[in-house]
Image (cartoon, one colour):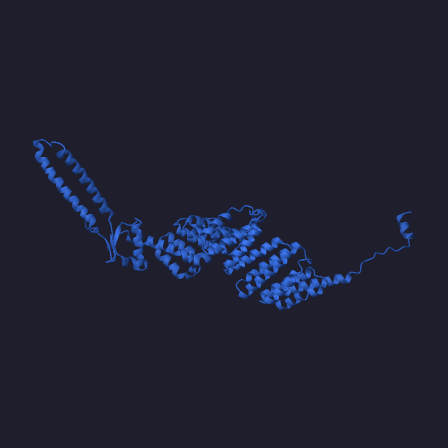
Length: 490
């Protein structure tokens, strides 16, 4: 029998049976549509979107993905609208979904993203209280579910919040707890938690940097640089290097500070963190403190920022410093007082300014042998005591030969030409004196036919000795009166 014959002869009907789940599918579709409609209106009408999101969880017979997603969106909107109490209540409800309604990895990622989102509200004191409550609820939830990874992440965020509030005692206690969690039973660091260890070190380094505990800072800084088992976020490396640069600056180790600030800038730039601009200012500051003539913007990483208006004031300062233009330097400082809003720059710019004024003093006194201190103060636009302080430093340091008459307020410089002239006369007189002794005191002298000539030479030698005494008195007296070439600045 052929297939056609079989089909023709067969009178049986073959029907398929379907499960009656159409109603359930329609319910899920309605919830999904409701979710996406609310998501579309959350920018234009956040109030309406919020109500729509909050209406979704009750529609589910059992807790599921759509209720979890809707609560996440609702919490973010409430936080944005500064309804912190409601956000906290709904976040507590959200945490009930993580045990069974959604997968472990999805819930961990979602909660971590939520905590990252609310961190942006640090500027609002009420938001900070809400954030702390979020952390507390998260730690309670995930400690019971034994999720160590999220427990570590949340505790690190909490430690950062405490550090921002400058609650150093609470920070130190939390960091000890975190260090213990990242160690093996024998007390050594656990290599599998190297990334977390480095984040903890970064927070501890920040704390010691803010409290100016340089001894502990130096130890931790070296430990952090030796961690090799981690692949840290560039921002973490940026924080460590920035604090290291500040530590070196406090020790006046300008070269190491410049190296660390450059690494911090490079890491912040890679992470896309705005902190890179402030660190770039620190890098330019160390360039001046190093008295370097190298243009820092010659490096490949810094070239794009050469004309950035956010660092234009520091760029102008560096340019004026490298050209020894004291007037331009002072003008830039006076016009950009916001530079000193950063405590670190305000603390270290004084050293740069002193170096600049010192160079200005050396440049001004170069043509003269005698001048009033008041004249120098007028030219440098600073007070006389400040000029006296700079001059005293230069004299003690040996960079200026002279003395200050404090009673008259006058600086008297030793002339280099006078000193060389007196030294030449002294050497000549000593040589002639030695010849005189050799001929007339230790031998019989010349014969009588040459006596008259030698007696005449002896008289001349005596005159040279007298001239030597005279020149010595000139060198120790008023040094500016040399053969009518004295220059004075009054």
